[in-house]
Length: 370
Image 1 (tube, rainbow, N blue to C red):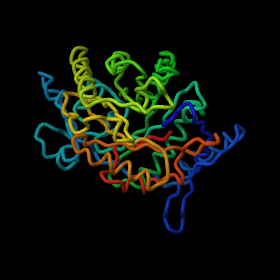
Image 2 (cartoon, helix red, strand yellow):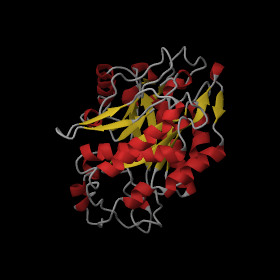
Image 3 (cartoon, rainbow, N blue to C red):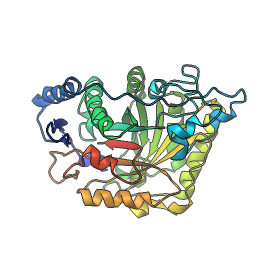
């Protein structure tokens, strides 16, 4: 993930293998005049496929009067399995639609107990809306992105068995600048994406690249966004540096734990019920020092350990395998990079197909496309 050196022009062409039932997912370079082709490909997905398979009911439960159960962190994998949840006496049957929308407990009974990531993959498009060289979010409008993302959701939904798929925008909010300074995306832009996503039943991740400042400073900027029901937050250790593009940064286990503690305390103080995700990226061992000491049991916080970095399939799988060995962070994510037209810039070649992504062990719960 090196945002200031990447520029994407993805076609996002969905190809269906009608005879064999195989799916292929391609990303190719196109000019600005081909934007309609990409939109057409997403429309073809909607028109050409059979109705999306019926989603399993995800059990939901009423809030206890004390609110204690709503704040209890639920962990992967067993407690998120439908059968296991159904055996819990306090849970009642319900649909996942409210969970996908990020609705509050007042809108959907029990939605603060069972988060959207339960029995679903989260599928996100990543980038900075005001920059064409920092990911797909800078290449397309919100409306076009939502349409394209829906096509990708259908591909994954066809492959992931009984699980559902929830779409998301993954916004680079704090961007590292030369000498480790931080530039921020306009808050009005972030709010615009949050509101748009909420109306469509989508999530939003607000990402901070840290720079030369303490992790605690980044958290202070991120925490207020948690007040929005469909918003989650992310930290990127690669950019915890005062020499971006030259030195890959790092955070310590103690800093991650402190960030989780601050997040949990903030949620308690502000009366934010339920579970919120904190995503941590890693593609080299040095990016998280003392990794075995990271905790994933803070009240209300779902830590998502995400494999970042571009390259060929063997390298991608090796990176994910390395992250998978950190069993103390059981919820995993995986990031993919569309092909770029910028000479010398990195990307995944070839891009893994949805079936290949879903074959990773453990299966990633968060899947990000930059």
